[in-house]
Length: 128
Image 1 (cartoon, rainbow, N blue to C red):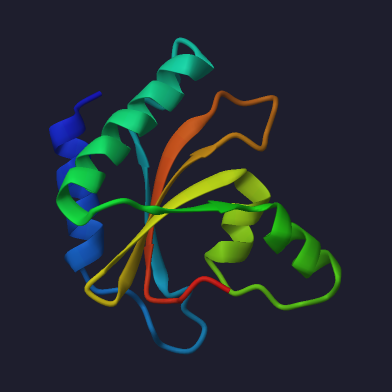
Image 2 (image 1 turned 90 degrees about the horizontal axis):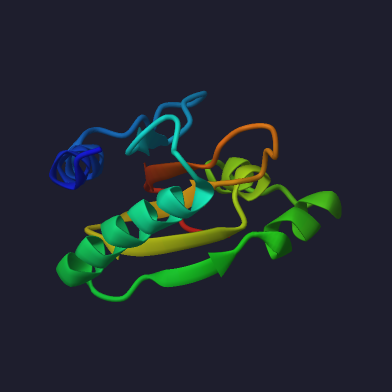
């Protein structure tokens, strides 16, 4: 695990081209840190360390709980990607709006069978 390397990866996601053609998803994503953490606490601590550095760079993030998105989707409302996918995988999102893009940092923790993972998504799609 290398925080500097992951920050560079996030910057690459943010500054790279994001697909915008019909049929494309309109976002880029990456798993950060280890693929197998020693404990869930280690995973959350790494996410907090990444978030701290991003906050130093871009200011305080907005925090989003995903329960409302899940409820809205269950009522039949169309939730755009990557927000629909994130609401199925995570419970809490940290978001920064940077140069007309949303940088989303979260821990994927929706699958009890798998170890949580730190996850970053960059999109041009506004939150619903």
